[in-house]
Every structure is written in C-alpha cells, then in structure tokens.
Image (cartoon, rainbow, N blue to C red; front, side, top):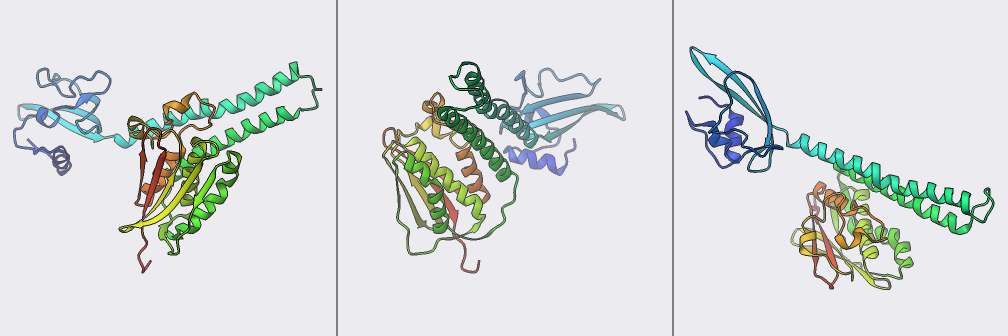
Amino acid sequence: MLANSAAHRYAHSLGRTLQVQQPITDLLEGAMERGSLLPLWDRNAPPPLTQTIQREGMDVRQNSLLMLAQPFSVAGETGWLVSLVDISALRQAMAQRDQAMHFISHDIRAPISAILTVIEMEQHFGEHCSDTLSTPLLERIQRYARSGLALADDFVHLARAQNTTVQRAPVELGAIIDQALDDTWAAAHERLVELDWMPQEEEAWVLGDASMLRRACVNLLSNAIKYGPIEGTVSCSLALEGSDWCITVRDQGEGISPSEQERLFAPFTRQAQHESSSTPGIGLGLAYVHTVAVQHDGSIRVHSAAGHGTSFTLRLPQASAAA
C-alpha cells in the first residue's frame, strides 16, 4: 500500500518494480532465512497478525538483510509494516573479526609455542648447561621468532590498509621497485635467485602512498622468490598500458590452478600444494596487494599455467601532468 524511496531503490537494485497492492512476496522472492534456508517470507504460510517478527536472511544478490515485521490495525483494516535493513557491512565485519581471532589464536601462537617447546626440550634433554644455549637452538629460536614477528606485521599492515584513507602524493614507480628489490635481495640471495629488472628511461608517476606501494611490490617479489625454484629467476617489468602503469612480477614456479586463482586474493588463503609444506606464510601478502590496488583505484591480476610459472600485474592509474 505504501513504500518509501529506499524501498523503491532496493526493488530497482533487484531488477524489480513496486506496484500498488503488490504482494510483498514478489519483492522478497528468492530471499532465504539464514540458517534454516526457508523463504524469508512464505506466501503459503504468512506469519500470524499477532506478534512482531524479526528474521535475518540473504536476498538473491547475497545481501544480508534484517527483516522486521510489525502488525498494525487502522480503521478495521489489518496488515504488516515491514522494514528491511541491509546489514551486509556488519556481517562482513563479523566475518573479518572471526578470521582475526582464528589468526591470533592459531597462527601467531604457533611460533611462540614452538619457541617455548625447544627451550623446554633443551632444559630437560640438552647436553649443554642450562645457562648456555647451543648455536642450533639459538638459530631455531631466531627462526620461530622472526616467523611470529612476520605474521604479526602482515596482519597489522593488512588491517591498517583496509581501514586507512590513502594520502595521495606523487610517487615514481621506478624508484619504488628499486627499493622493493633492495628489500628482497637477501631472500633472493639465500635461494640463489636472480632478480631481473631493467629500469626504463621514462619516469612512471602515480598518485598514492609510497610506503603502501613499496610493501605491495615487496610482497609480490617475496612470493615469487619463495614459491619459485632455487637458482631460478624472478623478473620485474614496468610498462605503460593505456592510461595505467603496470608492474609485472614473474616467477618460474609450479603455477596456480584456475580454481585457486579465483580465491587467491582473499585473506588467509594459501595454495593447496603449500598448505602442508614448510614454506612460511598464511595468505595475507596477496590480500594486502589487492587492498592497496583497490585503495589506489587500480587492480591486481594473475596469469598462470601449470608448470609455466606465474605472473602478477599491478595496474595503477597514471598521474596527470597537472598532478
């Protein structure tokens, strides 16, 4: 009988149009109640006009909805006043909180627990005196401590990137790549990996946050070094395509299957072949790169084939001459 402008906008977002005397089931067709997966509003079994109804569900576009239905009576006519509240952002925040709690309770605790375990084993079964730590033990503790610190850093940087407004300033991408290569040189040297980078003469200017872009490049290079072969080559290139500068990092690794490419940039996602390996990581590096790309109005794409390596391309809008 009556619908406000927000209701009309919501109907239009579903490709539907509200009409006078139209059953509400037409608007809510396909919406399912969370948990039970029953229709959010069942045309064959409407709720009784005696109590307020509150239900949470998902519509056909996967929006999370909170439905509040209040019965009313006016001049002998009875009906429902139905309100729909989009709680998708709240649901997403809750999912991120659950991921964070899982990360903190498991992944960060793991290296700390390992440190305590090796210390206790050395105290009880070691051949050395309790006040003297062996070199292998110190190296193992150092490795676990660095792993825990890296996990915490990745988590903090991702959370900060997701909740920070980018402070845009002129940034030259060639210099950013040079700095990222310096940051990853030690890791490449340890695996005898050659870093192939040919700077170009033209300066590549974008507007963005230099520290975020530098870390995004470091993450791409680190992954290529980590998951590529020992004594392999990691190549990095910078080119102008249309109005975008494109940073491409290529490795000579095993490649990524199409099914895994679809979820590659989601937080806490790792490739199946690396889940049980000793290669460190919990799947935050590429999630950070994706967040930085979106924050800079750019994109990140992956191209890979089994046995032929993987390339990641970070696209960033070219800064205008005025900027």
